[in-house]
Image 1 (cartoon, rainbow, N blue to C red):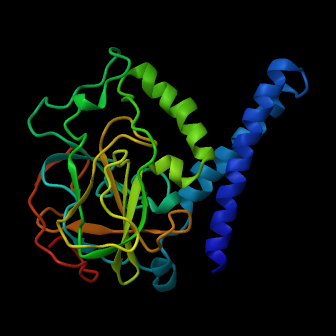
Image 2 (cartoon, one colour):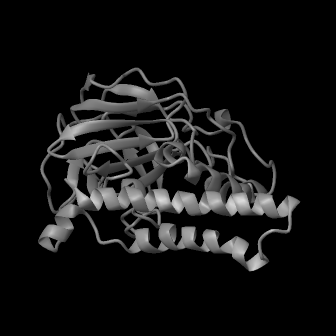
Length: 289
């Protein structure tokens, strides 16, 4: 449809502006070819598209058609155990500051089996191994009966970015370079499940080589299919989860969800996730189950 084509074109144009900026910077390093202010023009245009237009774009196709937001889809949690929520749609939408790649209602969760079990943020060490974080290697579970439509677990799991210097590198260098690669490089290793009814679940930052399913496989609610990792645009091992209205993140709008028995945890809220008790994604409802 036209809106999908326009969205993909806009994302491509944004990446071209970013690539142009890097090219001009490198060129100016060897030859005084561009005026200093002109070098920053493509970066400003990239930022305008990424953090301006995409942030303010109206909501889902259903919202634009009806003028109101759809109710959340009731599903099981993608993990079990004790976790903490970050970048939650319970606090703001879009939760990650942008609607690109279907992230409007996305949530990040980190494992905290006990207070203090997860390393803190500070100046040192500059980076940590993934084994230091309790989320790394934790099973990822299907949130409903579903069909696997896409898998990718070939990208490496990098070290954490949980120091001030490392997070600066992450935002100003690493993140910008990954943006050139589009959705795949941003979400890292990932799996997309078709829950039926035009609803798709995306799990990002999956551990390299951990997926046990491939496109076309059927999974049951609560079935393990992979492990939490630290690939893509990730500062530490964690689960990035979202629902979308299309299988392609480049073209998708985000959809609201609620985890059965939990709801949508707010930023900083810890919660206990029990094994799945639903066998399919239920219809839109107005609140937590």
